[in-house]
Image (cartoon, rainbow, N blue to C red; front, side):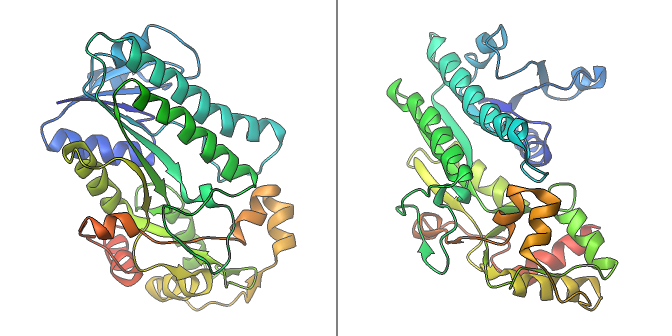
Amino acid sequence: MKVAVTGGLGFIGEQITGGLLNNGFDVTVFARNDDPGLFKKKFRYVKCDLTVQGDWQKVIGEHDAVINLAGRGIFTRWNRAVKEDIYNSRTISTANIVEAMGMSKSKSKLLINASAVGYYGMSGDQVINEKYPSGVDFLAMVCRQWEHEALKAAEGGARVVLLRFGTVLGSNGGAFPLMKKVFSLMMGAKLGNGNQWFPWIHCDDVCSVIMRALKDKKMSGPYNCTAPGIVRNIDFTRELARSCGRPVIVPFVPVFALRIMLGEFGVYLAGGQKAVPERLASEKFSFSFPDLNSALADLMKRG
């Protein structure tokens, strides 16, 4: 099976690409990086800007499946330009990918498209399954439009799987290495009052979900990619501090301080969603790390 991975050099993309190669898939990675060494890897590499139409679209059409992970990271201070890039890097790139899938005579048969639990907005203690409506804030709007563009592939006959990720925890990238460093220095603290829900998932389980989506033709539509053992921010704070062998000295980070440091994004960190993996559970997906204790123990061993 020939699989295209867009955004394949990011934290999640590298994990997925490695897993695909280990399982015998023929992989092509699409990204902006122009490091010459990338062309000597075990995968085929195509340097491109996914937000600009080009010859790369012809290559997309050569594949049986596309895993679309492209999108600017959100963990930074937001301003108007950053928000525009967060939106465009997801929606325009996805529209171009779907267009490329439709241009091919063979036509790619599967699109696995990243999304996020931010789709639901900040929803308090409400239990959120995949049927819950989308929110009204900026990230909800981004996710909604992102998924809208992806679902256009279904009009051309493709199977579309939408993966609404919680915070992906991994030792090699994403937010976890920084969080671990902060807590190891005894500077970690709950955000705001700490009562907000913190939907998370171990990177290995993300890879397993994607592998299953590649093989299981019954999978389609949205899936909450979150661990069943969802916790509140205050509980995550305590468990991470315990795993680091350090006490929590700073009582909390005020919301106004988050807003000063990170702009609008700081407010999101003090919110959350109690997003549960209802569809994965009903389809008997087996999590390697269903609870936070086992996930943190594994990540600490990996360094």
